[in-house]
Length: 141
Image (tube, rainbow, N blue to C red; front, side, top):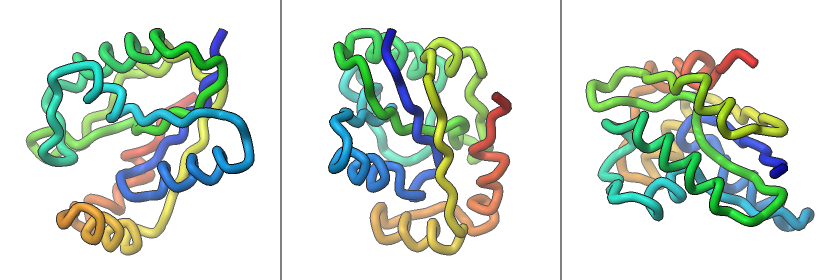
């Protein structure tokens, strides 16, 4: 059975950077949920908002089943922002289907996240929306 460590956090918190640093010290491959979804579907990202969450999560689960690595880091989110700019919590069944071995949740100050997103993407969510991050990224285990 695969050992999957899920690295969770709000957009711009540093999930990719964190995973890259781990890869420098440990022989473990890193995958991004959004990249797996994009590579295995017709999904085109035009913003950080989504409109087909359920379909995308099924694609993610199928994509992970095709990966042969026995150990991997997977970065993603517990919640997303929908087309109405509302927080959309992904169903617990998605994470149960992933058979995660461990979960690491990264956090950071909302102002820092705001700056990172603005610099990286040229756009961002309001500080108020970003301050929702404890709710936005928390899932009961």
